[in-house]
Image (cartoon, rainbow, N blue to C red; front, side):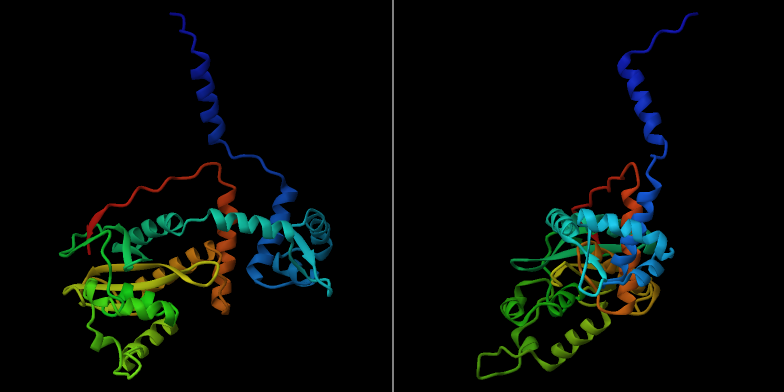
Length: 322
C-alpha cells in the first residue's frame, strides 16, 4: 500500500525536532576565549597575563591572541600596569543583564531544587510596604500541620524570615518598620523591640541587637518551634548587585524532622543556594569562600548558555503548609 505523502508543515516540524535534539556546533576557538573570561570573572580582580593564563589553565602564548581580540572588541581592557579587567562592552552587557533580571524569577529554580534536595517546604519573602512578605511557597512532599499563605507579612522580631531581613536593613529603613511590628504575624510589642529612651524609643533592645549581629555573622537564622509550635525553620538572605537584601529564602519542616543546626546539611544547602542566586543578581562576596562560589556560578552560567533549550519551572502554589 503506498505511503501517504506527509504535509510540508509536518515534515518541517520533524526536521526542527531532529535538529533540536542534536548538539549545536560551536567554534572551538571561542570556547577557549570563554575560558579566559570565566577565569577573570572567577578571580574578582584585575589579572596579569601570567596569572590569567594560569587561572584558565593554558599557556600564556596560547592565551595572548585571544586576549588581544577581546581587547579589540572592548570586552576587556588593560590598566597602566598591563593587567586585564572588564572593558566597556562587558560593562554595557552587564548593565543590560542587571536591568532585565527579576530576583523572584531567578529564584524559582533554586527554590524548586532546594525543596527537592531537602524534602522540606521552601518559602521566599520580599520586603514589601508592610514588611517581609511571603510571595512564593514550594510545599514539602510531607504534609505539615500549619498553613502559611502567600501574602503573609512576617514579624521582623519573632520569625526567622523577618529577623534575617531586619539584620540587613539600614537603621533608617528598619526603625519605622519595627514600630509597626505588632501588626504582623507573631508581631512584637514595642517593649520587646526598643530600649526606653528619652529620644522616643529608637534604640534597639540589647537582645535584639545581639541577635541581628549573630545573623549577619552566621549568614543564617533559625526559628525552633516559634512562632509556630511544631515547625522549625532556617532562613538566609539574597543580595542584589548593590549589596542590598532583596529576598529571604527559608526552609521549613516539622520540629525534629531535620537538622536545624546552622552548620548542618540543610543549612549548608540553603547557604549555597542563596550565594549562587546572589551572584546571579550581581552581588560580589569579599571572602575567599565566596569567591570560590562566584567562580562556580560563572562556570554554571557559561555551561547554561550553551544549552539549546531551557526548562520552564512550574508555577508555585498560592497556599501551602509549613
